[in-house]
Image (cartoon, rainbow, N blue to C red):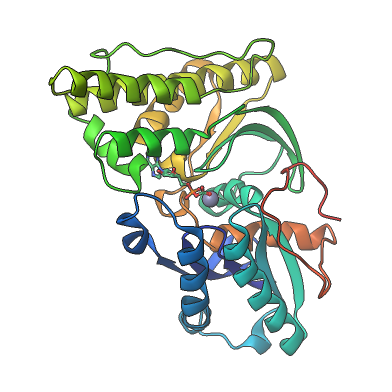
Length: 338
Ligand code: KG4
Ligand code: ZN
């Protein structure tokens, strides 16, 4: 089954053709990073407009790269939630138009379910059940993937997402947007024990995260230094901050893995590209005898191939939308689509 998938939930306009949920026939990502850089973050209105400008060409290119025509396809899939509402609406309306004009089935895909599915593209042998740490710019979840379309949230952030917390601290340190990846690069030359940062825990929940205090602590270090006319060692602060964030992510995930008795752990979302997180989780997996699934770096960030992969399993489950499909800025991952 060949699915054309469309993704436009944030600042990447993407289209891909995926066969049977596991084989990428083409994948095109048009990033808007350069346009948002001068503002230090994504400007939703600019994102929506740029999606409108790019989407036809991106879909065309994905079809050309796959050497297919619309007659060769079986369905069209689209990210319908969660994300920036104006950005999501561009993809959803484009997909609806395409479905209406071609007669192709329309499959709605939850963005975070898509991120998890990036592991099915990287590891053909991976099947649920497994546990997954989903860490992106907007979400930080520990979930059990009980089946391809059945999820349980074990823990989540009470405030900022891990990616957001990295991006905001990176901006305060003078690093360019997108902060997370630049912070990752800068930290390579730093001493992770140079700065003391808190290790926030959430009272009454061993699996939930809280990152906003950690972010404030790092920003305070920067401001205090500025007020005293001192300079911070940026590489050291990046390394210390990454250690603090990844310690929180690893501690709760390791606890959840042990408590729930899973032997398979996957990472997903933009932050799963982080070198420290990948290294630390690999060490924990080795120590505990778990199989660890780290998505290919090319599939960690937003892309449409992961949407095409998840769409296949949503289709098998009968999750097919009508022309009334809407976009939603928020939507829990565990909520049944219909
Ligand atoms: O999944 P994603 O591409 O978009 C959302 O769905 O939000 O995640 C974007 C997030 C951003 O916060 C970005 O800074 C972070 O992923 N990110 C990283 C790295 N690459 C991307 N964070 C840390 N280290 C990286 N190498
Ligand atoms: Zn994402």
